[in-house]
Length: 113
Image (tube, rainbow, N blue to C red; front, top):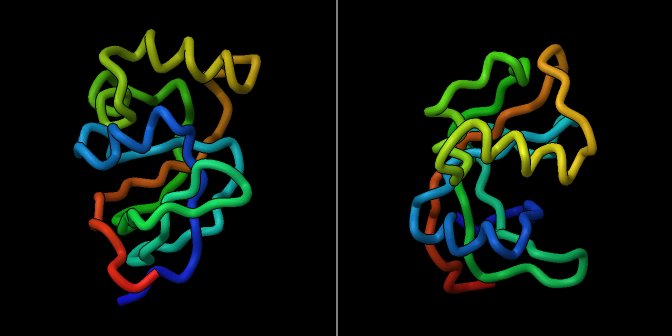
């Protein structure tokens, strides 16, 4: 099945995704993805990569409900490391903030991009 859309990630995350070390991402807004959807990985607004992911789960979560396993799925070694990165991107950490969680798996290279 050919991926139908793209999903934006930081360049540093792409290798983690390919290696299976990053299997989730959290966003402060609802991403335009759906469970079961396949998406090309995108690292900037102009270029998609031939790599794709399969979205396994999409749900809401309070930041304060994250646990060390959640941080590991995000590709971090600790919850503190994830929090530091979150604050560097979004400027604040509010444990009452609801975020969207996308759990996914690496689905390989699209042979027919």
